[in-house]
Structure formats: C-alpha cells, structure tokens
Image 1 (tube, helix red, strand yellow):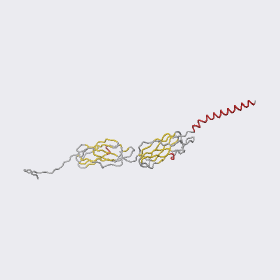
Image 2 (cartoon, helix red, strand yellow):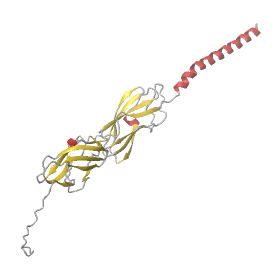
Image 3 (cartoon, helix red, strand yellow):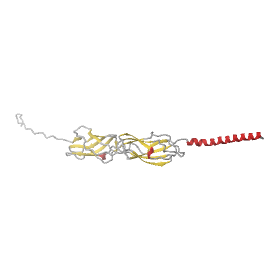
Image 4 (tube, helix red, strand yellow):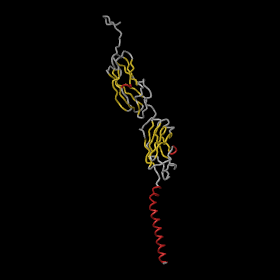
Length: 266
C-alpha cells in the first residue's frame, strides 16, 4: 500500500506539471501580443502641394488602435523662410487621426513629425515604439507672382498689321489669356486689340493687332486675380511699365526749296 501511495503522489505531480504547461501555452500567445508596441505607419498630406493655405492637415495612421493622442505628441520640421507654424488641432480615434497645422508666415517646407513621449498607448497600455519623422511634406508658398517685364518682340518702329510682346512673370503662372491684357495708345491709332496669347510657365507671347492710324502702342496687364501661381496665389498687381511700339504710317514734312534758272536755291 505505501508503494501505491507513492505512485499516486507521483502521478499527481505529473498532472500538476502538465496542467501548468497547458496554462503557459494558452497564455503565451496573448502575452506575446501584449508585448508588441504600436508604431506609426504613415503621415500623409490631406491637400495638394504647393499651397498658400493658412492651415494644413495630415492623416496619421498607426499600426493599431491607440489612445492619448494630442497636440503635445507632434512637432514640426520647417525649411526655408517659413516661421510661426504650429500644431492647432487633433481629431480621430482608433488607428487614424487628422492633425491640423497653422502655416504661419513666409515660404518654405513643412513636415509633421510624431514624438515618442510614451503618452500614446494601445489597448494593452504598450507605449508607442518609436518617434516618426518620415512623413510627407508640404511646400508653402505665400508669395504672389509679379510681372517682370513686357518687351517688344518685333522691330520698332513698325507698319505691321500685328505685333508681339514677350511678357515675363516672376514665377510659373497659369490662367493667362487675352482678357488679362489691355493696350495704351497715343496719336491717331484706333481699332487696336489683343488678338492672341501663347506660352506657359514664366513666359508668354501676346499678339496685338495694330488697327489703323499712327501712334505709340503699349501692352498693359490687368490685375483681375485670374492669373495664379502653382500655390494659388493671384498676381500681386497690374503692370503698365512695358515697352511700346511706334506703329502706323509716319510722314515727314520737308522744307520747300525754290530754285532760280541759274540753279541757285532760296
């Protein structure tokens, strides 16, 4: 009988050990999962770039649902002459958040970064694994384009039925058409009109029909906010300082000379 009791005790120990091993096997997967820290997967622009907007947003995506995300978890990296930018708002839940930033003043690049201060945690209270500074950047451009020059493209003076002007802007612009121009004339010129616009980027050629009569002809540019740069900034002002053509037929009055029979003049 003592031998039986010893066997029974041995069997009990084995059973307890097996039970413990089973419990560990059941608990280990959950324990391993709980040990995984959340990470930032991406920080993506919400709007297009370049931009002149006063505020911009990014979508921040985490590897899993997290909480504790607020303004203090973000920092900004700027380049160029941009200053005064600041994080102004955070919205969202789970794995996706939207962060809004005031762009301040000046021109430059702007990137949103996530800090690693252990305040962002997953449901198992694991803090963020690391900071993130690989997000997309905006190019902020708040400087309005200007007209650099409006130059004659043909010989001057001219009797041509049409003449061209080369108009150069301070940066690439779009939206340039015949309604953006007018002409200033002197003398007897009439029927003058802008008849065509070609070009792209910073340089455009504007064709003007010279009409009839004679006088000076200058091309002016209007400021109607239809000409924009890539960031959406409208033209800063009109332009009336371009070169002019002397157009039409000019007649010169010469003094009359009377000659006598001997060939002398008087």
